[in-house]
Image (tube, rainbow, N blue to C red; front, top):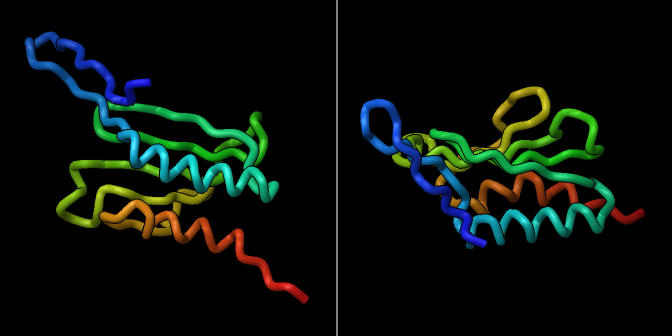
Length: 115
């Protein structure tokens, strides 16, 4: 499946591009998603590809708001970093240029103390 979205012409004749996760990025995210589903933490996800941001939304139940959003904003690549993890309340939990490093904030939820 091709993750790159086609460009669509605008009224001015300039194509608008949609931001999308590439195959490697999506593989990294889906690896974490699979581990969280098997741990019983997550149940569903949604993808959105918009003009300035690609969003991977994570749900505990299908009919509720996402508990986390993993966003890719290429325009912030040289500033704070193009990847961010945003909580249900809208707070940015982690931001950076390395997707695996940014996703570590969510992987900590898999580590539980053994009594």
